Image (tube, rainbow, N blue to C red; front, top):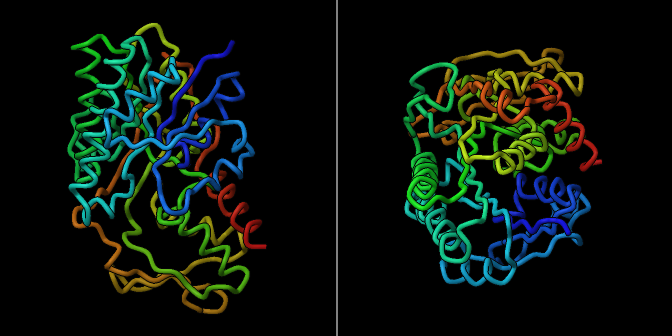
Amino acid sequence: MGKNAFITGITGQDGAYLAQFLLNKGYKVYGGYRRTSSPNFWRLEELGVFKDVELLEVDILDTGNLIRTFDRYKPEEVYNLAAQSFVAVSFEKPVLTGEITAIGVTRMLEAVRIVNPGIKFYQASSSEMFGKVQEVPQTEKTPFYPRSPYAAAKLYGHWITVNYRESFNIFGCSGILFNHESPLRGIEFVTRKISDAVARIHYGKQEFFEIGSMDAKRDWGFAKEFVEAQWMMLQQPAPEDYVVATGEAHSVREFIEHSFEYIGKKIVWKGKGPEEIGSDSKTGKPLVKVNPKFFRPAEVELLLGDFTKARTRLGWEPRVKFKELVEIMIKRDLDRLK
């Protein structure tokens, strides 16, 4: 018999890839999703695993609901991927972000402690916790400096997992995952916004798109690979926290340039700051415009991860690098829009 795994946030990018990965390992996968007027299962359907997972309406704002769920389905591994995960929204809804992304983790851990302290628990931490970075690159020992309500909430979730590990002997691991993207990324995230817009421009369905800070640099990896590290953490003899990254930083500007290169367009930049425009080198037609409404109140300029610990302890390292990741995303959006 395979193990039982429970994934909160299974309808998200990581949740869908992790479900697929665990099913291939022989797990029985239960997935918690939040009740909405129109359930969002397209990622599970796209990966062909929708019928293979057991989906449950679960609310991480309700501890009793979590306790009953764990008691009934008896998971041996719990992966907490649920969050209000959009940084921009966290500035508009900081209290809601705290309730879900921070206190939600405590509710999950309490349910584990009450039902079965032997459950192995994975918490999705974030490189955004490093924020105004105190050293480059960032490791598991780099001091945190969150720059958004989202990052502050993630930091609480990270430390409460450490606290339950040390106080109650819970096998709790936090994966400090740097930016990880894929064709399953939500359209509200900058990378998918770019890949979708470039595909639309290619087919003449859109003339240009607007963007915020183009000089922010991120360590971008492939989500499908990053979920493997999440599983690996829970297979270790002792629970620890790990940075999962690629060790390369690239700007939003580079992501845009590579995306247009894929459809045969070269971008020429003119102007500075909010006045900057990226145009087609052949036609002079504007394709990218800066809109200050997309600027963050507090920007995170550079995130670059050192995944040495994950490589040496887990045997994990990234295979898909930046340019290939951009191409995977653009190709899929071109296919979708065909």
